[in-house]
Image (cartoon, rainbow, N blue to C red):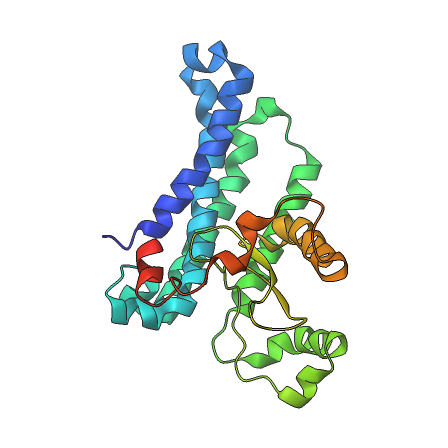
Length: 239
């Protein structure tokens, strides 16, 4: 109901440093509220960071959001405007991280923190350089790697390159295993956090391919459970 949904996600994740701080400091934080200043600044930085990158992710759905009447920053301000707002969020994040050693001096910030802050700033700048629309030159290295891994792509061709999609299945969890009705065909989809989930689920899929089954019961993640009911009518409702 509001375009501030991106900020809500950021605020939700920003609670983690505050909760961790209170869990460690205990009564000190409760009896001396000023003790919460440092984690509060870090929480605000997390909120600005997450809000910014979620706006960037949402840019790929700007057209759909507008057509479906969904509230998002890209749908309201356009992709170019959304990218500027995301850049402002990340600038705020860097400013908050820069003052963190001042408000949390007792925590022992040193040269290591300063050095990593420079690295983070460089990565943020590169991120916003990469998300320029309609510029495929920036993904040339990625495509060359894909061609080397799957030579058939060179013959099939690349129709569209989409940056940073987060995939979800109809009920949220990843699905992997044999494709119903297709001999020797397997898939793995819905890995929302590729680096965090890809290794384990890829290992289980490899066992399915080689041995016909995995070492664990993976029926809950088997796409053969999701058949005719996964249609265009039910999917938006599940989402």
